[in-house]
Length: 384
Image (cartoon, rainbow, N blue to C red; front, side, top):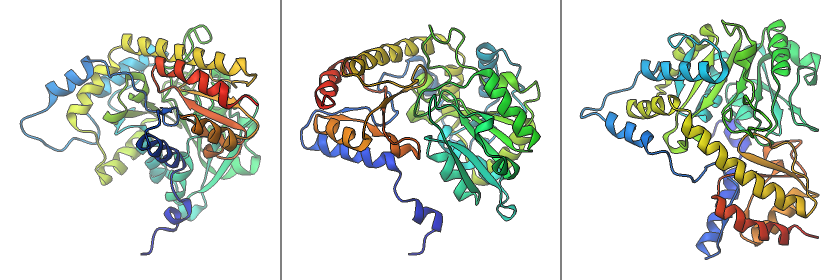
């Protein structure tokens, strides 16, 4: 069978291979504590499924691509509370079926493959930036991060800026948990505008952070791009903020002309969440209290694991926000295998692209009790 060459060349999604190994261990009767996939296990707050159940209709009909007005308004209101920005729910908000499909499909609306458009993204990073760009026919330019793992405007070579059509960043960053400051975001926005590139800011972990480090939470590109959000799109998700990974609900917010283009694209593909999922998402975006509770739980997990690695002299890099710990080790594949033998599953940093070698990513998804149980395994398996 002939395949799209992009699909054939990419191979398997790398994190999926780690997940398969974890399942094999479980099938063999080994107790597994799985830090590999960003899918938290805390129950979804009850008011969210209750809102979903109440919205299931007697007659099922197609959802509108533009999304329910009440969901768009809830998202706009949340952004006003969280970032103190005014967002037009009718022209600047696009509900999505989760953030992954939104990240993947967005380049399809803006890349001109005949023009040799370039998509710039940071690495190590979320693999879907690259995959979506390649399927859209773009040339990809990964920018290797190190140090504090923050992408800055000066990190992108001039020749890449001149051809860039889309520029991705992620804050708080997956996989490292680094946070881009408002000043650094403003510099990226300004440079993108000067080079006629669309700036795409993945902010799906905006509500997961250590309060003592970020009293007001990490900044958003929306805060530094002016009232029209000219040339800027931001990406949000209910998945981690509200424990709704299985609901598949997110949003793209920003430049009205870009949002209009995405609506045209998404109408063509028929991509929209069911109305009852949108009703649940509207309830979630309208409540901040449950997000604060979850933030405290993730902070507790981070503290437990950070202390465990400190005892054996391994540095946790950045990781003051987002859902992940990023740990420096000698060899990430060797360390991954050692932990796997003890029943602790992690992701080797190289799975997230160049620059990830020599690091482990731990997703803060096991329960607090499981994180405590993992401490002995981590210290035993990674002590030379």
